Length: 378
Image 1 (cartoon, rainbow, N blue to C red):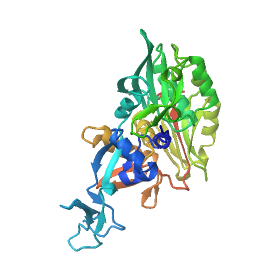
Image 2 (cartoon, helix red, strand yellow):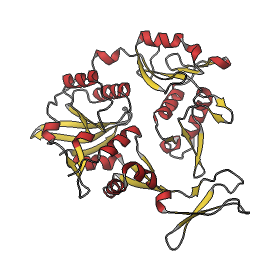
Image 3 (cartoon, helix red, strand yellow):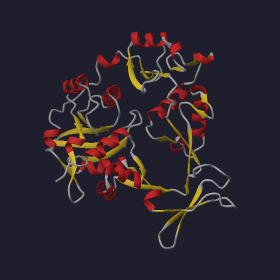
Image 4 (cartoon, rainbow, N blue to C red):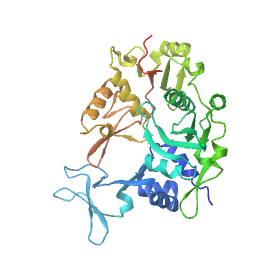
């Protein structure tokens, strides 16, 4: 048996939900593991690219048009009436897009961990899912959840949300890894009777491509007991903020009342300061202040901030138009123009389809402050 599935759990947690071109996934995971995950249905085929980008735009026919040949080959050729760039020979792995199916992942994990699968995406817990139930003995049933975040504070907030959702139930939480779980969060979980189970340490993949438990499920889920919900420790936060200081990487912070007031006191240091508590967006260096910003603007921006790959708001809307228009209106308030691009959320064209990317320019500073309960007013 091999436990080399660990690289998958790390990538899933870092880039949740994990996906991309088959060629890229093979570079990240290795050819064998990518094939095994695709064969197991965990990685599923989503679409095939119909265009391929040109080095520079030289006409209405850009980007190159992708066509499959009768012999199975693939080419990308110039779409302009007068050819402006050369034809490229390609392979299907260059244009096939795969992504993790969380529902199929739940089924695949359930078998080795002896979980009775019952999948549910939790609308009230970001990147939180119900995977099923575990029965250590007849008449005893524990609910098994899955949560993926990418930071200590983010996990603490997500676990609190799960506990609120599952109040009164006995539960355990599956995590891709435990690298972001602080000792304080771990102690609180143990005290509440909630095992936090790292899948990187608990589920591997065998030579036959099937998933295997790396330790007995009864041992993994030992210590589960009914929980009454989060205690006072997390209730002290009034806000969560994504802050980018000059020459630093953006980081999430949990803010109690004092920390929130300190951050507000330093508003002049940022290019953009968005505050959901006060419903304002301020751009001190260009002397702009926008009051009465609607809550849905903050929700749209937070969703984009937490999306670690390209963000396509149209995927959450039946016709793909309304959600995209809502995000574009929010971006005009929360972002700033830097030359010919937006400084925080630049636009990309993928297959002639506009998507957005949280990719702030190195020089821009910001603080995006979100109320801890989503609508708190001081």
